[in-house]
Length: 343
Image 1 (tube, rainbow, N blue to C red):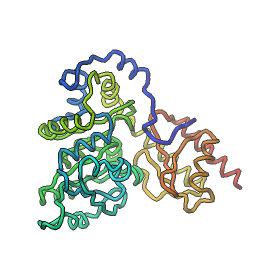
Image 2 (tube, rainbow, N blue to C red):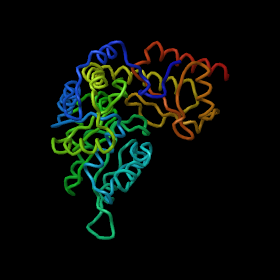
Image 3 (cartoon, one colour):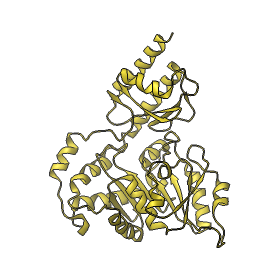
Image 4 (tube, rainbow, N blue to C red):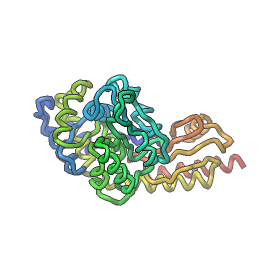
């Protein structure tokens, strides 16, 4: 089965497994795990931040950021399809006691004037605006990338109102690869950023949260509250460090594969892609197709390709480190064959 459901489905390779077995470890709650310490220092350096924190997942990293930046009763400005709003089990309200102020977006970009107008005035009737939330790349937007100029404008608005900015940068290295910039150029526009080791980078588990020393000091306490105080965590930090050191440059291959696949979808199917394919995610709408989304998932599965129904009338194809150029060509051949069978 060629698995295009997500970039989280990749398996650790032999090198990662060897590094896991040989990792030097200690008690990370006591800050004594040398492998975790190396990973956190390296991640902070890469992003141009003072410090970083190893978390078990992107959701945990995001929740630690919310608990650190804001206090219960405050409001967080975010787009209406943000991962933290749609996919994190309402943890923003259940754990952090925060209210989501969701705004329309175009491929992850909220209108700048709309952001300004969403910032609450000083009035006892309103919640305080505690944080502005960005997602880059944007998951439901089709892996789309926020331009540097847009990030700079959001930063300017936030600074004018003394509001911090957090980036859910689960795939921030995909964004940097697409833009052709150092990841620091993206991260410098936000106060904190979370990114996943277990998505495009292909590590088996874990995410990183980066920011100032003061921010990470508090976030470490919040991680403990969330059950994220790990002990001999070097065994899972080791493949994450390897992925961060050696797999960033290969992300462009996933992007090239996505472009090839998008062209084939356009040529051989009646699916519609309504976003520019900038990274490794393709969202294809089925509203113009003779097959429903569920039928597409079933048909492709019968032909050896796994995808997911992403919305009621949409599919998601996600290229990843375990899908080769040969695999992509095989999927393209399948789409051709299906077109021929349909006349």
